[in-house]
Length: 154
Image (cartoon, rainbow, N blue to C red; front, top):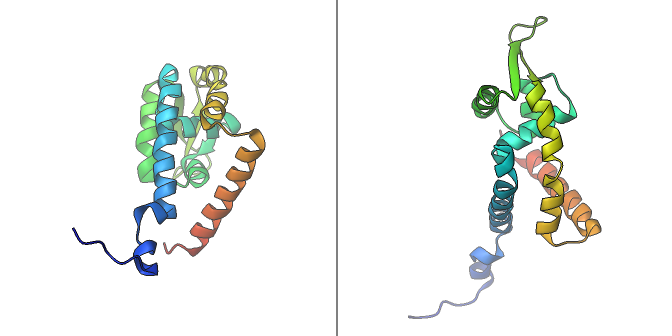
């Protein structure tokens, strides 16, 4: 097998040199850890994200939750329906604007928050980084996300 020349263009197209692959593979690993941590809560990772948003601020519209999670309503609605079927939340039309659906945590959804309190510590331990490193990394990722959103065409 002939070796290819190691040019700048060839190096630029190597998988291990891709930022997107580093982010993608890290996301896969993070999701695996979350899957283990969320088993006892009977939540998937996307469902956990919805619950986090509602634990912060109950009574949001579907569109507000979607904005917070960077999800469109077509992706979010099935998640919300599954969480409602599990008895963790309720969905109801807004009396002020019938086009809006408002999401409220049920008693069981509120109670689940206490069980979920151990999840962030589990992630911290699995990451194997100092708290300061994680804070810096999170800020860098948020900056990257904001830059990418600003430059992405809709």
